Amino acid sequence: MDATREVLREEKRLRREAEEARARAAFRPHLRVIPERRIPSPIFVAALTGVEHWLVQELPPDIMAMPEVRCFELAGEIARAHYARENGGAGPFGAIRGYLFRTTFDTAIELAVDGTNLGPRDGPVPMAKAAFVL
Image (cartoon, rainbow, N blue to C red; front, side, top):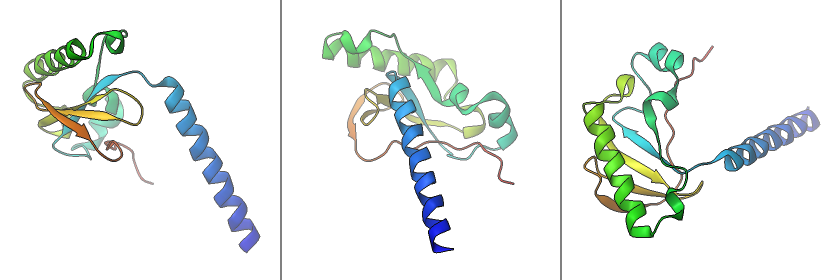
């Protein structure tokens, strides 16, 4: 039984590493909404429409090639416009509390709802959840 558990743990680790590698390869800079709730209410709305629909705001593909000052100005402008367009809400996730400007897979800059740069965000980027548990 110990050998079986070890094999299962190793398979799980390999799947997790492969998933992270795929996510790193597909990464593009974006704004991620910091919502009031990490788990949506009602959950079926987010499950049907997709978490990304409510919590991700795309950025121009060339944003990181811009001068740093312009890059942060543009991210702030997009955050302000998104907040206004969505009336400060993230659907089933509640109110928008701020944004994370994801510049790389591992780094993020926190922005206020008015687009003000609040500085680097340490640690892993929190992800909202909208999955059914059976």
